[in-house]
Length: 66
Image 1: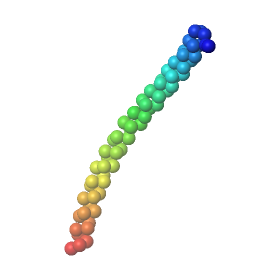
Image 2 (image 1 turned 90 degrees about the vertical axis):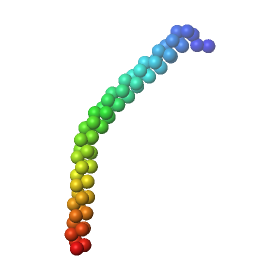
Image 3 (image 1 turned 45 degrees about the vertical axis):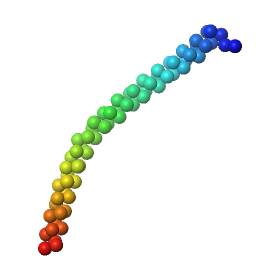
Image 4 (image 1 turned 180 degrees about the vertical axis):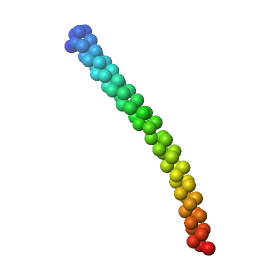
């Protein structure tokens, strides 16, 4: 049977490892949120460009069909 000191050490080690993993995950989440924010503007610009190009294609197809 494990002593109180052994149980304490085991629990403390598990806590320390979990806390370290939590901190690592929080840093990764923050980094991913920064990456996400940096992608938003180019995505919005590309969506606008696609809408304009769709309109241009429609105009070209209308002209060709006449």
